[in-house]
Image (cartoon, rainbow, N blue to C red; front, side, top):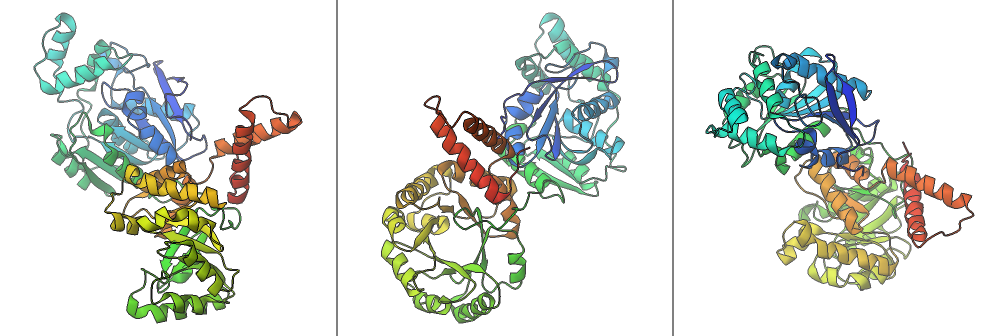
Amino acid sequence: MPSTDAPAQLTVTATDGTRLATYSWGEPDAPAVVAVHGFASSATANFAQTGWTRDLVRAGFRVLALDQRGHGASDGPHDPRAYGLDLLVADVIAALDAHGVQRAHYVGYSLGARVGWQAALQVPDRIASAVLGGIPDGEPLQRFDLEQARAHLEDGAEVTDRITAAYLTMAESIAGNDLRALIALVEGMRGSGQPDAGDPPRQPLLFATGSEDGILERSRRLAAAVPQGSFFEIPGRHHFNAPTSRHFRTAAIDFLTELPTAAPAAAPARAVPPELARSWLLVSALEEDLDAAWRAGADQLVLDLEDGVDPSLKDAARAVVVERLSGGRRAWVRVNGRASEHWRRDVDALRGLPGLAGVWLSKTESGTQVTETADRLGGDVPVVALVESALGVEEAVGTARARGCFRLAFGSADYRLDTATGAGEVAMGYPRSRLVVASRIGGLPGPVDGPTLGTGHAALREAAEAAAQLGLTGKLCLEAGQVDVVNEALSPTRTDVAWARRFLADFDARGRKVRDSGDLPRLGRAERIERLARAFGVEPR
């Protein structure tokens, strides 16, 4: 992934000559999000240091951000006439123009959210949607006590107003901030007007305010007045710490990624072989619209005869699978575990079906169970061993080495049930790593991770990337909407592909001679990225 540290600054000149510091993260041709910080903060403090740029880039967006005039590395005029909503909106448009972005999604907090509301109204052709955090329904910065701030600046007087003191403390902690410029900004913003609930923006807008913020209910009312407005209450946060909330980031990214055409993921250029498959879409064999599952774009489809089918309907489910896999369709099938009374009937019904790609063996706890399943299927059908218990994890090496075993997979939900383990990354780190090591010892492809349940796209992407860091190379999907997210998260980025091809070209040009101890590891990584890029249809930017 591209770095989420502050990138090189691009200085943009505003319409009145003010110089603005702007920054860009992510792929240049990805869907753009322009991020505008709150009063007394900066682009880096509000977005880079809090995880926003990292998570938005991971979600497939390019992030543009600017230090608003009077903040950070931008110019800080001391004349109140150099500030006002119209000027701040014009600054955002100047930044978009300088970076070659015609239309963007908008993320703003506090003052940045107030600017976003106005931008959505004034230039709707430039703002596709907006996330507006901590936006009140009154005058901008009306809670800031100008007299106390001036006294503090001139003679160091104590600031007794809690809100003003918090703003000043934050302002003094941000590199480049000029208190005199910030006071001028507040003066200039007074009289700019308040959001008119009777004439709201028409784009999709997500409002988000902390549960401990005094403006919570006013923000909620404002959201209710917007035709395409929705509201998220940020749990346990007040106005000054809401931007750091993981719940806020997740809700915002879910909102942006679930918009139509927000951040489409590219489908694979060709059929992905099962040893490289990223997304494994698991659907009940009795799903009403099975044809939709085949159209979902998953690398591999798995029809479920196990937990997705009521015991009283097992025979009916087998009949559906036999009909589909005999009639031109191709898929994998998850069969009941070796200890189940249904295992024999499942396997016998599948044997010889022309469309059977392979089977997933539920609740695998030994290599013998895999070999017995493979043999009963005729000896030439690949078996993915689904490991779902403490015993299964500890026996994973023997399972991976067993004749007939094609790949390991992690049944995370049943493993947690068996071991009373939590779902966090630390708790799941051992079993996942155990399967990765076992797969390597057994000479198998990387294992397939279990599904992520009941979460939005941002959390799903984070879970897939965390599993990939451990060496898992596939993931079960329980919904068609998860497929593109998983495919993107488990694919090399275009930046990675560009690096790999440059390295390989250079290596070939020098006669494939090793120059230093780092060449062979780099060669291995480059060749793997190139192999995956060709399989998944990823082209360098």
